[in-house]
Image (cartoon, rainbow, N blue to C red; front, side, top):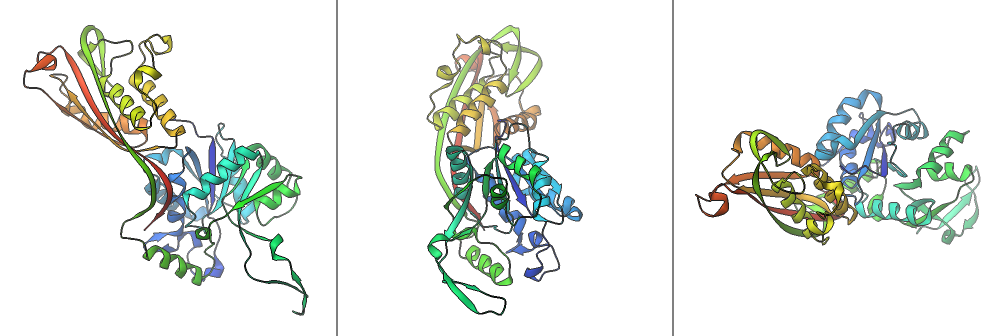
Length: 400
């Protein structure tokens, strides 16, 4: 899998006393799913591979792990659940402590902003990279703002054109955020204030109305109303979808070991080729590259390249998915049909599907058939594989 360069720390350790519930706020349900669960939807739709770090009350670690695994699916391996502290700042510090070495951009997100769309996360990442500094989403202040004294007397009207109501996710270069936390000498209400106290600058980009914070029961009802207006079982909003087809053929070579569908098949004749001849892996690569508009396996992995001499299929699939992901696509699902007389595939069908699904980060189904003695596969001269894939971009992830 592609090593993530972006991490999202989801802060869900607060008590939520203003919500007036017995449960911690992140575990209160909105139409049958917890606030924490819904806050993760948008993150798993992001264009970039991400390390997801969820910070929760210590007593809720086990339950939180179940929630994260359920939402993440095949991406669960990139998720960490850690115990938070009594303050938001302490909880974020706990998340920073488990960042992977490859991370260079960190987003901090309040789980209470459970309906923030995927597009907002992607925009924050893009602007942090472009500007090389911290960026936070904000909305213009529409109400007239008054400054008052302790007695409640109005002192002046504040110029609201110079104000912004900030939201999360707030994004920062990793090194700057970690250094600011290490240097912090007091408590701050958000990460932008902590960065400013350390001498850094933070920019504001347009926020999103759906990124409102669920603080009171009125906010909870507002979220329920928004979700109830969606069509049943809908996902908002899948962006571009693309399909791709790949086909590959390799002749048998009794002097080679057989690698097929990502598995080694002992006591079987292998397949001839520049690499290990895994026709299933190669057909999948062609389908993925075609769907993403990246060419074909021959143009990406030329036979003149010594790096791929005798390389196994997982090498090609991992690199192909890296390229596809860089184009902003994710795998919806893939199916491959093996055409040939051997090996007998059905006993290892589940094993092959699990291996390929893990490599590609999505659902892969594999089947096998013969040609009833017709053609080169029917004569036992080789194996063919036909693959179809569905790729998608996610513009948002507000799911009912």
